[in-house]
Length: 250
Image 1 (tube, one colour):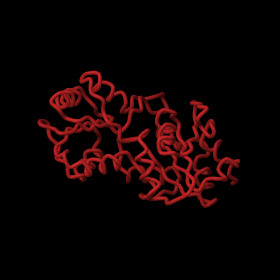
Image 2 (tube, helix red, strand yellow):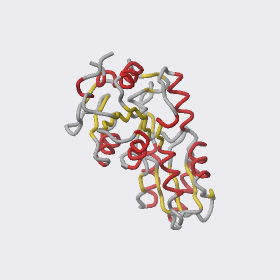
Image 3 (cartoon, one colour):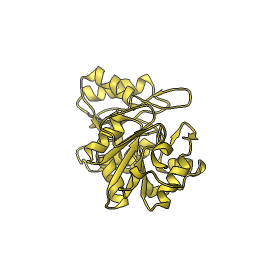
Image 4 (cartoon, one colour):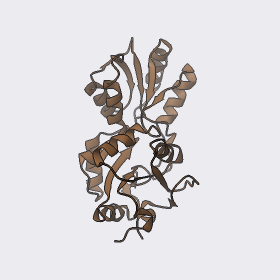
């Protein structure tokens, strides 16, 4: 397997998961070959995701199940970035949390106590069991002075039957009800990319994703080159392709 000439000048490649490496429970066409080709050429590889529904270990198991080789250190989730931010902010001692079990574990690991009343911070992360009561408690906490933070602003994420609502849809509801703007922890914030680069080491890096508003914008915020796969196109991208394999393989 031979790499495209577009990859020749890069030492590291940061790959988005949803819509880039896989859609739902299936790898995108020839994505396994593309990632293997990157490794075979000596490129550093990391998987960087705004998906707040699952843990690092969940993603590693899924990657292996689809045929990708991956280690825990190579998977950088927005949950990990959230944990770092919470642990680094001493004034945030109590939190109301909208999120999956994985997000709740990250909040606990950061040393922040969850509460239904008197929160200093409200964590907003989309998950499959989101309900109106969560929205109500989040809005009330923010109106009482809590700082809202969110794991991403992705309005949707791709699934085989069409787009599903993402964390951004929940964030929009909270912000509309409170007139407060949430701080974004995941892409397009550059911090999640910096975390990946700390693990990979120095070198010229390319970010590959399927969204201009998060992957490409985040790459530019981190002063990295970005490429898009899927349906989106952008003049700011180094390259645009239909699939990850189309971008990476010659």
